[in-house]
Image (cartoon, rainbow, N blue to C red):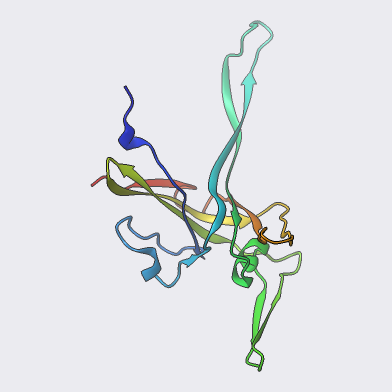
Length: 186
């Protein structure tokens, strides 16, 4: 028989901070830490994608491989941001500048980075899961990510909303692990 307490339900919340920002403990409200910026509502939550590549080691004298090695691994967090803010665009583009103009009217202008410069960030994705009525927290901690891949910002007829598709690729940090998954256990 399965364990319904281990079934994770519902989306979570994604946060971005400067690289080397310490990750909060699972029992600390992230919004109380100014370095962590919430990316807001999403269209379909987020997905952690892990794509390993393997190669067999073979010799002429055997028909079966002697062993298999992992030769590469790509990890990324993919989401569709429903809040089309300039700050979110800045993270998706991997940097750039937002310049406020006090107006009136107040106008902010975003300019993406040039093609040789893009930012690296720390990414935190936190979700609650149900343990027979009690909320527990799981958080995915990726110390370094780049925003990679093509993205789309569609503008459509109402009631369709403008969304921004974002892919944040994990990069091996100089020290520590590329990914940590932390559960609150009590």
